[in-house]
Image 1 (cartoon, rainbow, N blue to C red):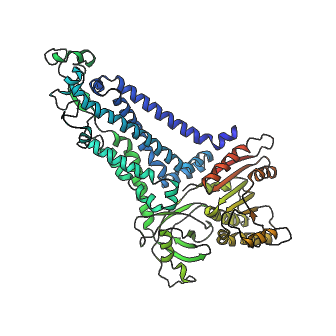
Image 2: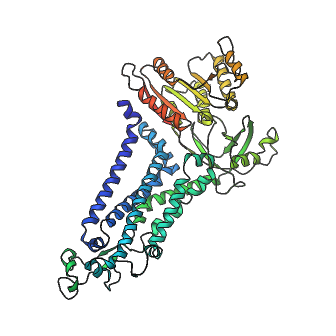
Image 3: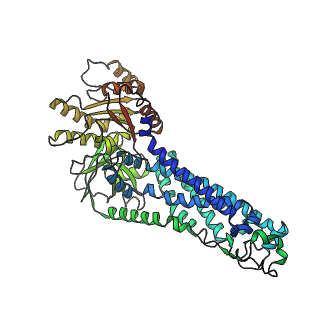
Length: 562
């Protein structure tokens, strides 16, 4: 249980506090509007729909305030740097920033639905008030301006009245923007049509502008003379309003817009964030080399003045000649110890294919005379992989192209290990790479082969262990390789590496006990980059194999998020 708290406790604590705050704010606002005398007459017309609308609006203000904070990458990098010196557990929560961002968005969707339904009832009941009880008719027909009932035409319909108000138009705009943003944020669209995801997300500006102006017209009106006109005592004596000194005519005023007060601070922070990104993007970046790799992958080696990164971090790239607006995330595959930084780009979409063409990838060996496109770089930004040096044993698990963050980590480990003056906690590294296509081995193969050769030359045997798994795409030639897969072979016939390729999926129920057996009493950091299904499985296994008190081995799960 204690180890579950290490892996899951902080995240669920944060989510629990956030949910409790939402429930408390909703309930408190509901009760406030339910018993506030200044809204007595409006409640008389629309009932509890007013309370539901205002309670959901309060929660919308809170969550719209929080929504931008998890995507302020520079702010998170600053906090990560500060937390790294005081609390490793706190810094790990920053790796879940996109998870929190999505949860907040779901909460906004929930309260938006409640808000819309409540106001639909409001408008229907406001129109029906002209044909309702005599008290409702009296309050609706008051000659005061503004009137508590914003609908002044008894022969209209609610749809027409909706589009007569700033609140109605801005509400429709905000809802449509929200639907487009959320519907284009699914994993399928984000991974297969990143441009659609990116462009629709820019509608957040329209969404925020719409909710800021949503309440400026003040159609939610409260009574301002409750001390002179007690509504609970006077509402039945509507025929004496104005003639009876104890029941003067009730006066009303529109409620002022408050949303801007909630979102001003995070919006300013986000503007500063975008300003920093723009400043970084304007700094000169030089493409020093382009290396073509198999499997439609090419490597960009870049230099930028003052650029400094930790292993496993990522950057955003923009190529103005392709698009002035699009920024795409790429993991750094170079080590901080090298005099350049690099990314590996797989040509699978329109933007990456256009970048490959602009960099002359298919024109043979790199030539200095080639005219390279202008590249803008924003970053670097922190990820979970940064923390791999904090554990005595680190287990790196990658699915397919998810191995890219670990290229930088492995290079950095080797540089640190060769520095006799370097001191670090890490003693062992295990790499498990699961690939669906044998061609995916090719671009990463050189790094593994180089590490094998150098460790063999230096007599290092217990630092780095790796296993590669080919899950599908076999043909008769592969079957022949399986038959040859025995200890007599010096190298693997598929990869050329000393470690043999495994065929099929990893047997995690065998691997985890083996890790526990060979590393008793050690806290093991497991770092994963790959598909969601495997992430869920590994997360559960980390929790399960941390429960044993006899061995004392603990697993701490870390996942890459982009």
